[in-house]
Image (cartoon, rainbow, N blue to C red; front, side, top):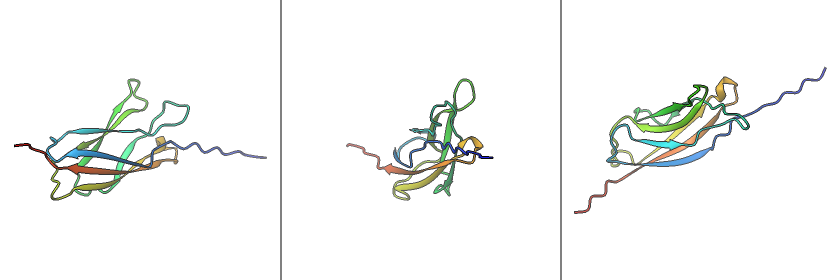
Length: 119
């Protein structure tokens, strides 16, 4: 007997960069490109697994109307940013591949830009 095993992995870009101003209010969001399964509307679930030890960020997932997948994924500030304390965060975000065992990851650089006040 011959068994063919087909592995279908979710597509997830491996690196991305977003920027927040240090003057951004708590709750400010930046859109991330979600992982998707080729030929399907199924989308994955996301978790920050490294680089956010102080819980400065969270992922906000907006579900599609049918509730079956993530339509949009945003990274959102949970705390006030301070560029002098931390000018850059290096986060590792994983997606679970809808629990099929074939997830991916995103190395996300978050840059904190200085407030520019012209006087």
